[in-house]
Image (cartoon, rainbow, N blue to C red; front, side, top):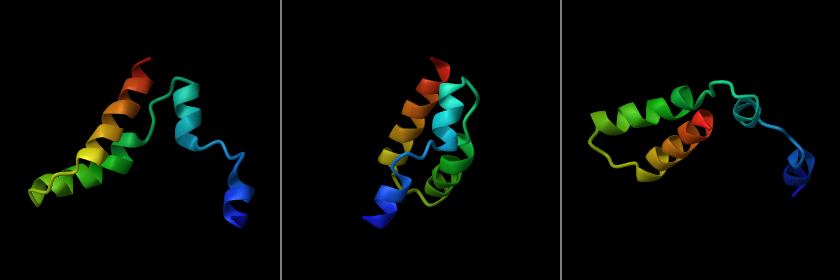
Length: 60
C-alpha cells in the first residue's frame, strides 16, 4: 500500500509519449516477448493484445 500511495500520481513515460503524440517504447518493451514467444512457439495473446491497443493509441 505504501508503494501504491507513493506512486498514485506518477505520469509514466509511455503515458506521456501517447499524450504528446510521440512514438512510445512499446516495440522495445513488448518486442522481446513477441520475438521470444515466436522462437519458442509459445502463444502470448495478452502481450500481443496490449501491443495492438497501445499502437492504436499512437495512431490517434
